[in-house]
Amino acid sequence: MIDRVWVKTRLDEAELRTDLADYGARPVPVAALGHSQNMTEFGSPGPWSLRLPHFLLDGTPSMGEEIQVEWMVPRPTIRQVVTELREHSHLIDPILGATEIRTMAADDQWLSPAHGREMVGVHFTLYRDPAAVTNLLRVIEPIFLATDARPHWGKLFLATARRIYRAATPRSASGARFATSWIPTASSVTGS
Image (tube, rainbow, N blue to C red; front, side, top):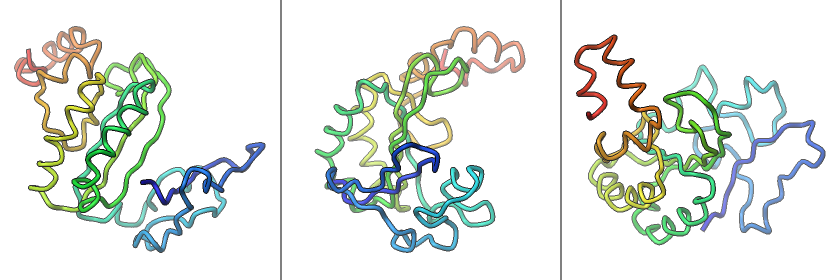
């Protein structure tokens, strides 16, 4: 059940929407997250460069010691993914610090998770409990992989390079040729 949200919006939008009660959610005061020393308060206006990042540049990001997991799923599959993830809330809730769901426009960058299609990022900041996180990933990664999702390269996932490479990198052949022209052992990186 989603009961708290943190909304970021532009001040010049015609209708500023911060009341999400009809979705069962309420805005979260930053102090309630336990990160008030490194996050901007909900609803405080300022330049985009200071409000778009979640954490202040001179603060400790997130909880400081956590495990992060993020998968980008094709936008048409997000309802199915969230529905299936909710079935595993008993595994998620005890180790969950925060979740972020954000949309991404399609782009043409080779290694971008949004290469060629609109995506939705499903991010989890999890408490540092490697055994519980590994157990969770064994259960939820098949949900993501069934949708041809792409992992965030800098966050934890268990899927093998061979399992995700072609889905995650549609230009895999071009990328592999480019990499091997610069790094002779790149075939071990690309899974080919």
